[in-house]
Image 1 (cartoon, rainbow, N blue to C red):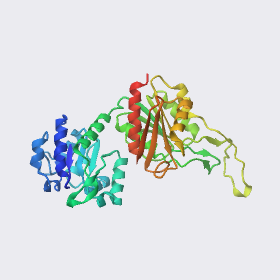
Image 2: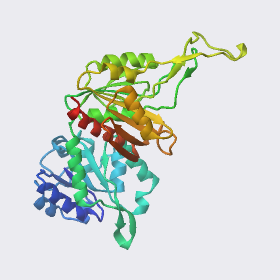
Image 3: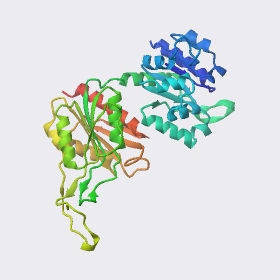
Image 4: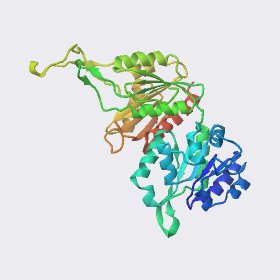
Length: 391
């Protein structure tokens, strides 16, 4: 389905429609009322695979949004205006296009286009971030000539690039169908006493993003997590707290898994003798003796099933690629995802991340600072390739 909003870039949607049809797609156009101020519905009816729709009510189908939403393999909105992004992020349905977006389970590609000031407004940035976290693919606007003779960021991406993005989404759709994937998330808590613990700053956002993306791509997902964050529908969630509990849950799930992705920040050490009650300040400074926690990733590497793909994460503060290569050799895994947790906007508790993917075959891929759902896509793209090559 091709959604067209009311912006000057709507004229480019005509070319997007033509290119999609030429590529073999069955295109159903949906125009907002604002779009018809810039382009005619007859134009899209003539170029697309069926007539253009513009209204929830002027249709023989009493529920056109549900019909369109269920029929679509992918929905692309080009241009996506600030109004559309805001309504979609807030879950507001006030026309056929927004109703269809809320009534579909198909992947969505949003292609923003607007003046620079609107694109850079904090509300727009927040709405785009919300949509990305929900799995929407956002094709960033370019920099160039805008309406009124202005220039700057906000120019609709070129039609060929939009079509390429749609093709990429379709290629990923269900590419993990039939695969069993185990993902870990969050930081473990190793008790000192009944109140305190040894832990870290991990929020679990990256692991949850990986689990949600794997489920969207058709995998049967088991998420072993220390957090209380909600996971996507269909994800089997196992909640744990300590490294020992995570080890038990992961090894049990990994016995039947095709892919194991250890995104959790597992504590390296734990108190040897946690106190059953509460340590009190009046009793003086306690002596806390630490011991190593189980090395879950190394155990997975030793006991892996034939053909199983193993992915480790490395939270570092320097020398990402070198640290990742050491972890590859030490743990016997196929891929290490390393990130600098001290970098601005990346690491623990941020909504964005910047990582280096280092493969056992010597390949390296840098994923620049982006939303953690986009990082999850890059990780799973690499996993899909590995599932096709690991004997």
